[in-house]
Length: 86
Image (tube, rainbow, N blue to C red; front, side, top):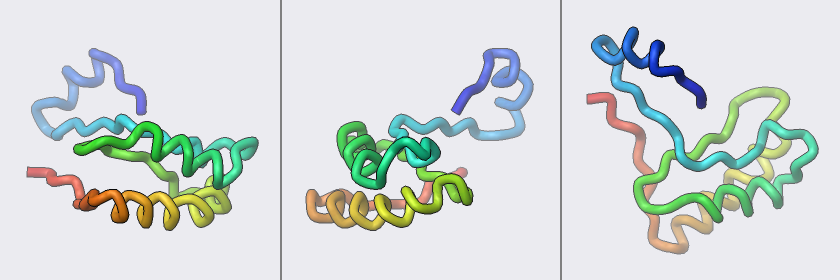
């Protein structure tokens, strides 16, 4: 989620840099799954890349929030796709 200009210069010729624009807050144990759902849905728009973490720390929030976020986005007509690396 953070990258310096120096780091960009070092890697931009070898890698495609892809950043996120929506953060659920699932990593914060003070947040509930409901807060993570609200955070994600309030910041996702067409073309967004949303972050959910695959860590033990975030597990409870991810398992509680991600299925609800995905269902709501599908209901709104969003289509989820993997990020293209080409």
